[in-house]
Length: 153
Image 1 (cartoon, rainbow, N blue to C red):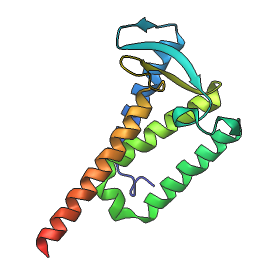
Image 2 (cartoon, helix red, strand yellow; image 1 turned 135 degrees about the vertical axis):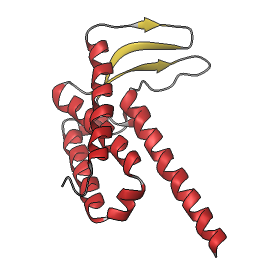
Image 3 (cartoon, one colour; image 1 turned 30 degrees about the vertical axis):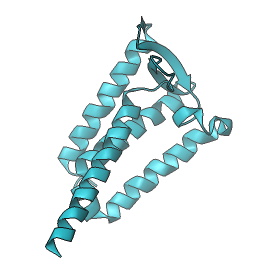
Image 4 (spheres, rainbow, N blue to C red; image 1 turned 90 degrees about the vertical axis):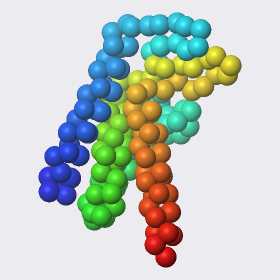
């Protein structure tokens, strides 16, 4: 398993996981901030993005676990794709695992960033941001790879 997922993958995974869990710990201990643009307040999300699928209740954590296992399995067999997007997948899987841990340890995913200036946005956490960044990283790299292939032809 370490050969397929090299040390760089696990190092990034551990750093992102630790940072996300540390940030959540601060809010679980009572940290709070109310500002003009955003608030930092503790909430629990029992669903996924924008509380979707919250009706699945306790089953959601098992669905998320299955999704993460399938993604690890996919990457195990798609070595070139993993190699191309190693950093992005390390970030994505780490953030997903961190949110999954919340589902098993707390009543839901620990969220704390609430943007409310100009419009109200769903409450989110560092892992959510990291998942979005990793998706953008993959999309940009794939787009640039396609552009380069077109130039060659």
